Image (tube, rainbow, N blue to C red; front, side, top):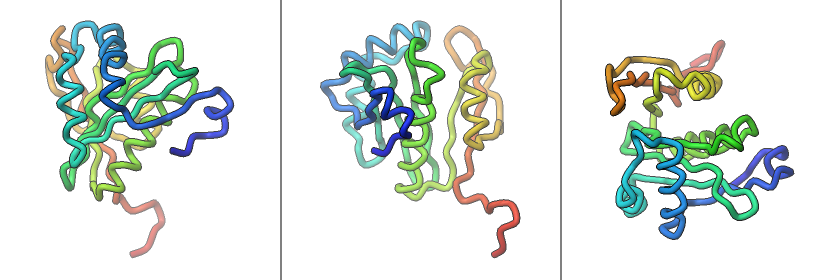
Length: 165
């Protein structure tokens, strides 16, 4: 997978998640999302569905520092999860894994990419807005602690400004 020169210099590598990665990813999941963490088996279940799923990890010095996953059932792709450990935030890793998921959605001929983001997570919201996502709905009390989820959508086939048919 192609990474920006900045990430290559920082020693970041991006690759497909494997079953061998699941214990480390699940440990990060519990650390990063203590209230909403996925159970271990859910990661195995997701990886067992490559016809509709794609999961990636980002590594630095052989250690997983980010992970993300996509479900795609035409014509909709859905970002299932995306996480970057706090010590590596702001280094372009979140952008790299999100770019890979969007590219995968295009390869799978999705028309839209959807995701849920916590209403109290402005940093993630700003990332998605930079990528062209727009908020389309709110799911009240979606998360276990009662926090709302913002539903965001990226239209992949949206005509560019000034484009002619």
